[in-house]
Each structure stands twice: as C-alpha cells, then as structure tokens.
Image (cartoon, rainbow, N blue to C red; front, side, top):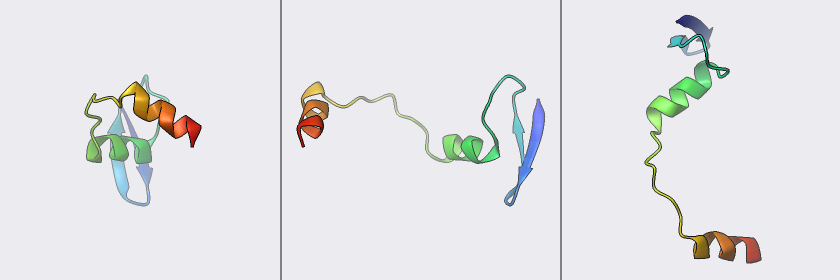
Length: 48
C-alpha cells in the first residue's frame, strides 16, 4: 500500500497500480456499472 497526496488530501493506493490520487477518487465516486451500450447506438454515433 502506498499513500499519495494532492490538493484534496491523502489517498491510499495499492502498490501495483499506475494511477494516482485523482483517479482513485474518481473510481470511488463514480462506480462503473458494467452495463454496455447496444452496438446499434455505437454504430450510429460513428455515422454522425
């Protein structure tokens, strides 16, 4: 475990990750749901 510090304070991070304090906070505050977008939607965005 390592501790990184930025303007918002200290954050504990595992030793084996390449990201820092701000990324850790973003992951904690905005959890990824695992939901995916339909292929048709992605294709339509490419067309636009």
